[in-house]
Structures are given as C-alpha cells and as structure tokens.
Image (cartoon, rainbow, N blue to C red; front, side, top):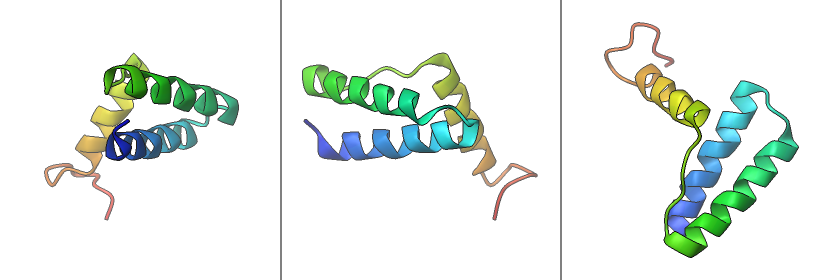
Length: 70
C-alpha cells in the first residue's frame, strides 16, 4: 500500500468530516473503506460531497479567492 497516498487521504477525510460536522463513526468507516481500496487497487474513489468539499477548499486556498483564509 502506498503510505503517502494513505496519509493524504486520511488527512483529507478527517478534515472533511470535521468541517462538515458529520459523525466520527462515518469517518472511521470511510477510512477503513479507503484503506481497503488503496490496498486492492492503489487508488480510491471520492463521494460527490467529498469532491465538492475538495473543490471549495482548493478555491478557498487559491490566490485569486477574495475570501481566502490567511
């Protein structure tokens, strides 16, 4: 298993579940699913909500975002 991919996925999922206020049990289940997917195929799939969050996070951290967090 690619440990770098796993670490980045873990950080992203933890941030996603914390910022969206979803239950920790769901985050734990999602992390287990991701770990299995990475072991099997060296990749994993995001849900629509995770993709939407990732896009908003990228825009928020972009230089061109007026509401950028410093």
